[in-house]
Length: 529
Image 1 (cartoon, rainbow, N blue to C red):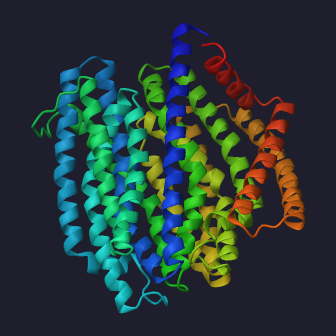
Image 2: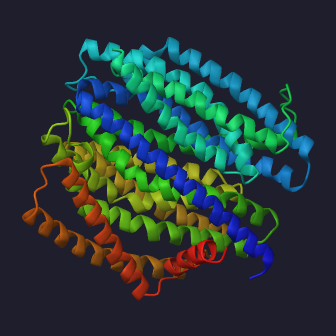
Image 3: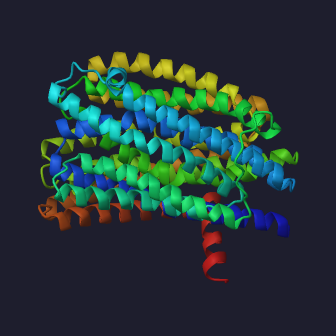
């Protein structure tokens, strides 16, 4: 391997490592926050209102910050940096920043004014939760949440600037401090009698802290802010050309979540809260590994495509898919096998009722079926965005939205809340199938044989892990008391350790390239410094 390639590979590994650690901490802190809330309020009207208040602001954040801004901004700004056209890059970035600030402020004002009119779009008020008192609380909480949209949109641009410079540390720190602030402010205000609204105020405060963490580092890279908006700038035109289709595509995808919440809100009290918690755990491995790896290889794939090096582009894409599958498949199977002990250890305390354990665990299992689809899709989507192809993902996402809605309407009548999860997982598996098929038509083969062989080996290792973990769980629960929280967490840790050991032992036995590469990286990083 040449020195240049080695440096690129090391850069991807370092970026992925930073993002994995930060996303892990941030996601775990998010669960800690929810555990505190559910131990105080249980899964009921107050938590349903709290979760509902996230829907509109979360949708705006995911569409604009979580994908739209970064996917459209990074390729354009990175090209100016790569070509050393710094002044053009500064003008382009400043114009986008100013435009986004104005647009975000307008969105927040409209949201604050028309919150009561917007709620029927996301809530099925026929559910038993939605008494007039709870609806009024939901309106209040949603209005508080809207303030975070302004700060998070600005954060998205700052993160895009930093990631274009391949600096992933400030965005990672910001995401951790965001959740730390929510917990700190929420608990403090809870003691002062603000109730669940204190955590919403914590969300807004956390978004401000997150923005401040991003702002100062961008100037260390030499960035120079310009007080101007130039719609005629070539970079601004390129940004909006990419931004429109990307936003539509992500908005369509996010509508799947809105559809799920709408159906859940029309079921029994607490269903929306249980579904939200199941999704939180389901998203944990995806947030930690899939998003991190996809974002870390995105600038590199953009660079390979810009220089015409399609072989390296395909190599990064294939390795990204295989590595994500190597990590996500055992996470999904492992969570399914230990779902009851996991939910019991994490949530069963305070006012969280014992009856919710089985409900939440079952929902979680059905969501995990589609985890591999939603995880690997993140890498494939970055593959589309790197070649500046945004229309195909939009078309696929529209089809998947329609499929999810149709399946949800059918399955919810048969299986209730579980039907929502089954429909969502089915849609995710269909999505990755279509995304991969059409990306291959755009760029040619993406080392499909390597991916197929890797998936088959992963599935075999997961089957062994499932049998071992299930057997260990039976032995544990029949021979040891699990009444105390200490023993509940000990059970989960033992099952995770046993399952992980069996999976990686089988992977080593099968000489999987993905495991070998991970071990080589660790050896190079920690033993040969």
